[in-house]
Length: 240
Image (cartoon, rainbow, N blue to C red; front, side, top):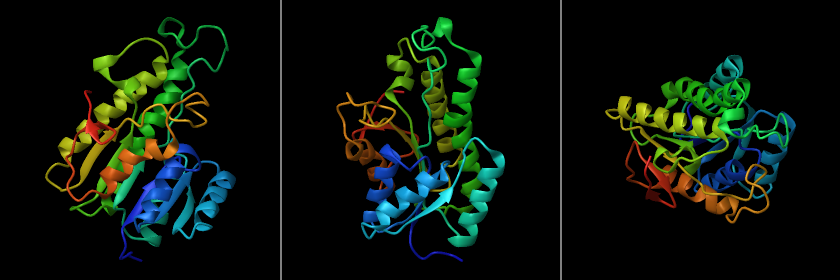
């Protein structure tokens, strides 16, 4: 089956920025696939959006598992035949979780296993999913958007949360590599910083709302003319 509508895939989308991104892309008339590792939460999230009369389907996806990614790509190919927008939103921030109050969120106390787990989801997960879905992306007009963070900016790098910071810097590098290798295809590849957003990850003190966090993603996904290989916050380029 090949869809005649634009199809968007959003990973890690059962809550927060990913969930709001699904909502906004569906409001732009896209068929949206809400992908999440937790099947019960993912199905419930998709149902909430369908209750708003939005065209959103759920599909299970663990970005850290090769088999799950292959199964997901097969499902997308069979069900829709295309992907016009891929939002690599799935991510974790686990520095310091192992020993609360131990100072483990500092680089001198960082555990290699924490960094390894973070990279597996935040970087290798985005790589796996992008590689798997690229064959389904039209060569003109398709978009890949990686949800990064200002905490990964080398221009403003400081201490704390080393696993998360290193993973987002690596995701930025991955963005640039894909953008360069795909520059002749018409597929646009960019990264965004949503800012500090009030989500389960961002916490209750964060000043920004999920709609504010999702805005630049949606802009890059829907604007007729966008650059490639850029890093954006609030629709404006920021330093790497």
